[in-house]
Length: 265
Image (cartoon, rainbow, N blue to C red; front, top):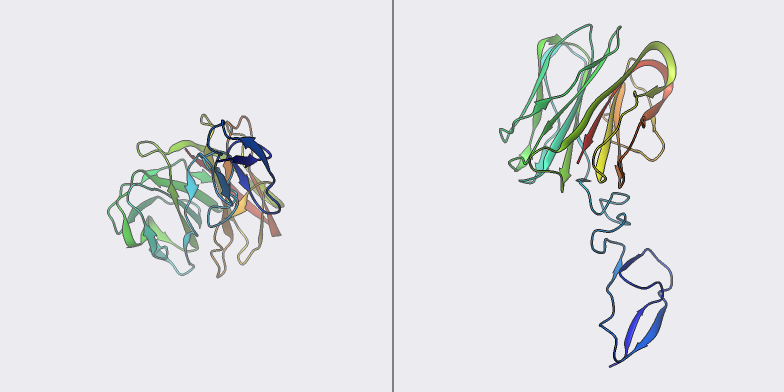
C-alpha cells in the first residue's frame, strides 16, 4: 500500500488552505498524522476553539471569566457562577477603591485560596491576586471576596485553568506598578518567570469609573466586568521563559492606576 505524507513532513497543524502530500513508497513507515485546527503532540499554539492562541503544552485559560462589581458599601462581593472542573486551578483578581482594607476569598466548593502580594496606589486604587491549586469541582461555583472593613467600589474576576501544576500553579506574583497621576497607560514593574509554558495575567484597577481598555501587546482582555467598572484583566500564553518583561494596558480615559502580575505554570 503506498504511503503519503504532508509536504512539510512530520506532524503539524493545518489552519486552512491546500494540504500537499508526496509519495513515499511502500517501504517507509506509516504516514504522520495531520491535526487540523488543533494541537499535534502538544507542540505549538492552539488555532481554534475556546483555547485559540494558547500554548498547547502549558496551562490554558478555560472559557470566559466570572465577574462581579458593586459600588454601594458592603463587606462582600460575589462573582457570577462558574462551572469548575476538579483538578483545575483558579485565580482571582480583586480590585477596589479605598485608602486601606484587607480581603479574603472563598468559594462554594470550599477550596483554599492563597493571598498574593497587594498592589496599592498611594491615593485610592488597589489590586490583589488570589489562587487555588488542584481545586474541588462544582457545577455552579461562586467565588466571594470578603473585606475586613465596609468597602465601596469593588470588582472581582475569576479565571480557571486546565493543565496547570496541581501542587503549585503560581510561578510569579507581584511586579506592582502604580501611578497617582492621570495617565493613559498602566504598566507593571519588570518580572521574570521560571517555566517555559505559562499563562501571564495582569490585573489593573483604575480610578475612573466606566472606563474602556485596550490590552497590551500579545495579551487578550479578560471578560468585561461591565457596569461602572474602572478595572480589567488581561492574559497571555507563552512558551518560553520571560526575563525582565512588563505588562501594560491602555485606558480610554486617562486615570490613576495600580497593576499587578500573576503567572500560572
